Image 1 (cartoon, one colour):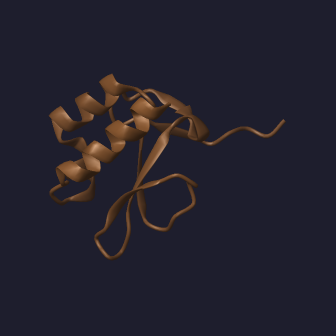
Image 2: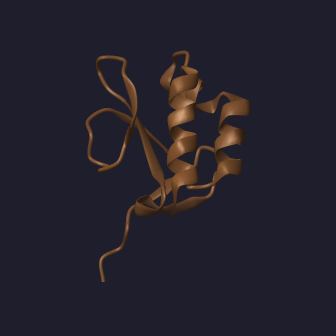
Length: 86
């Protein structure tokens, strides 16, 4: 049986299978978006499909530090929408 790649959630710091997490990508054009396929090119960050993890990541500004840029509220609202839809 093939092992699934493990990634760490930016909110709770727990390692999970890559397929269980939501991927956020910053590409070389400084654009930040949610990667539904998990294969887009660029620097990736992962978060659980959990509202508490998202709020903790926003509060600590961990995504801003990782991508070294200001994250717009639109990105966070898109993440909230993806988490609440499931």
